[in-house]
Length: 485
Length: 150
Ligand SMILES: [Fe+2]
Image (tube, rainbow over all chains, first blue to last red; front, side):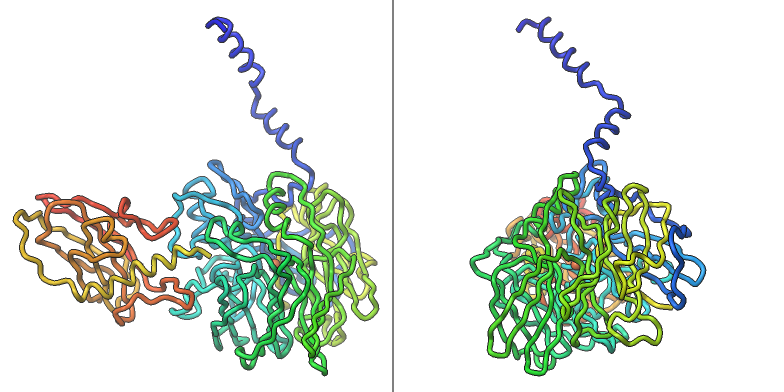
């Protein structure tokens, strides 16, 4: 090609590529599915705003705050988080009063968020984001996104992550008070996002470092009662564990950490041939342990466990057949790719003779919760997110599954919604299992707005008793906590 | 989550041990100027700073310092003037032995729980502060370092 021909070709190519910002934006929007709002960015804190009641009216006696946490900022000019679990934690307060409801949200002011903001790029490594070697990391807490769950205790709202300590947030103002250090020698010790709370208020939790775990016991006041280091039979990926009134139940799926690489999730290998193990520890003597074997499965979340008179331990779990969603899907959804998962409800029984049983059901289920007054005690009902749309990573319905009857009482918000976790709120004076309401949120993709819903826990399929709509559509979050009053 | 934090602990833990055994050195033939070091930002005015001065990458990564100090902490700042060094490249490591037990404390998983820092305020990135980030030149005029710790 001579010089002139080359220049002409280059000019033609250049012309073809001239795109106005408006066109670029329209193209990007067109290439994103409607549900991408669920993993969109929130650019700053959301001042308190009234919620508009769009349906029904709130039941008498319901008053309190639904606090929720979840990642809400993934993208910065110089580089994005590349995994759903690596967005900055946004704490939302949905306050329900006798006459009105409101929403306020503030980002947890983490070291990670400050560092990424200053760099104008997500440089901090995370669960599935590689980050940059420009990032300052003195300990894992410098990568703490505080984006997974909330534990209200001792006048604080603890914003929980998985591989580091909680961040303390003011429950009234949502201002970040700082990293929570229970005592100097416990600084930077990991504290999972899924503490198990006894009906009396004592909290049990784990923190993981490969094959070692710290077992936390907190008094109802939030003070540390005890910490114990225990050895585990394998370095399994543990997002959640469960407990009976007498036992800690640690499910060790065959997703095993066997190398030291970043990001964190890439350090794990899926080894289904090794099956799933279940380690049961006595709360009163953590050195007393039993180990059970189950077929391989992947899970994030377990339901509350209970022990029967003959010693059988039962709990439910939301299972998938592979860790593909955790490893790949939760990366893909940030770029609008469909991320299939096959998560469904199962029941596990650990028998006194050492046999373990896994009974799967076809019921789509995630974010299992139960009546907190029965935590660790016999129960039959599990609150879930359910109802799948093919090609969509997030569920669109909610419900209650009953183990005794085998029936599920489901409500489908419809194809325009992404469902979020539902929590149980007791009706004053009603001591029956799930005697009360379910409170939770959804993201209405069509209205581009977050909605707050209240159901009668005994009649979920009748639809919400009351729904409110916010002026903003916040990305779908993970876990929350209800504080009555 | 990150195994480098264990490395960091090991690298700084060695400080407590070696500072005690650094002996008076024979005066070098050619002395550089004094190095003035200011440690600032101390939030817990107890215990001591354990300071090591290193003259090579290998030593900085876990070998012996050419000079070591234990500076009692009684306020937000501490100072040390170092004399008698030969001209050349050096780097400083320091940890704040808050409880004064002579060791760098770690939590149950080996993560440091007492503050540490390095010259040039070299950060921990994917590992402990590096020689490349922490090194500074000491000339006939000496040098000055302000290291923020805590
Ligand atoms: Fe979770």
